[in-house]
Image (tube, rainbow, N blue to C red):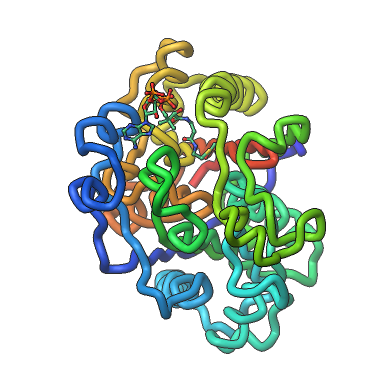
Length: 329
Ligand code: ACO
């Protein structure tokens, strides 16, 4: 999809659970150190839900913030698209639970499974919906409770992830706001670099899968690292070229908040300064599909985005999936 689309983000919202889990806390739980985690990832702390809180609970809070920010009633929303790998149930979708809780009675509702790229996949579907005249306002949510699928005895993975939710509302616009570039991709041959092996139709849940911890995140970190650096570099360079802009035109880059080393290495290869890059992984860790909308909402609520600003979003994750979007605010 390379054509320019008159689409505007009319509201943003986010929610981070109040409980902070610091690297020092993790030192007590697994054989790790604050120094190792900060040096290898840039993460200092992350937010974690309590055991009674699910993904839809935190998504609803982000959704309500977005409605308030956009000054829109829930009944006006025509579709809710939720990007998550931590849905409340295998089915029904988390989007349907949110639709019910916020009273968006006129909205279609469904989930998208594209892991860390899920928000940008969902945003693209939302933009396409707006091209169909009967969708006027679409809510896109990225929400994760990764603490529920992290193995808290595996130091190689549990230190990376956090919980949170972000939401945006989009509508068609003729005021100059537009999507300058949209790209979605997948490299399914890397499916086993990051997965939850059990609990699906390949290996249904059993006493054995639980005893073997097959219901937790499994990751080949070194291979992912190399792929992520190359992918992020290519996503930024290619999307800027397709949009017909230069790096000087860009106000902010909001990358998936994966790991500061991955982000720094990609920018270094592009010979781009890091002063345009929005980072919050130090405070929230990797929140998968939620990381970009949370960062966007914090920028927006701080009044740091002005009309006409150009923002680049880039994401990559399990699947493998990859995505980039350039918008003119
Ligand atoms: N604390 C202390 N030591 C640790 C920890 C920890 N939390 N985790 C691993 N180690 C140890 C390892 O056991 C290993 O020890 P050994 O040499 O005695 O065997 C040593 O540290 C080095 O391990 P590596 O895995 O080689 O460490 P690396 O420098 O590659 O960093 C990391 C690991 C941070 C996971 C890195 O590979 C990475 O960032 N990968 C990208 C994956 C990622 O971020 N995934 C998130 C989701 S993917 C996505 O969103 C695209």
